Image (tube, rainbow, N blue to C red; front, top):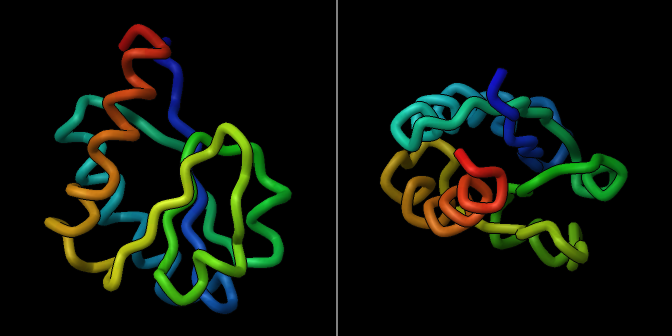
Length: 101
């Protein structure tokens, strides 16, 4: 069984847009040939998850902060597939290489 990438989506409360982002991110990852376990979170809780990537907004990226070994990427809109694909691509490719996928 292929290893799943672990992604946390972060919005203000961890309920609205971060949950909506899940379907968009899953679609993009499918294009890259990757499956993922995606959790929705608020900025304060995000650091408590072990993840391979955190996806948030520019406004919340500062609140999430730096997490050693985990890229924290920001997009203006969770619904913009092109923007998500662009910011996620280098990190997904690095993850695939690291995990021999």
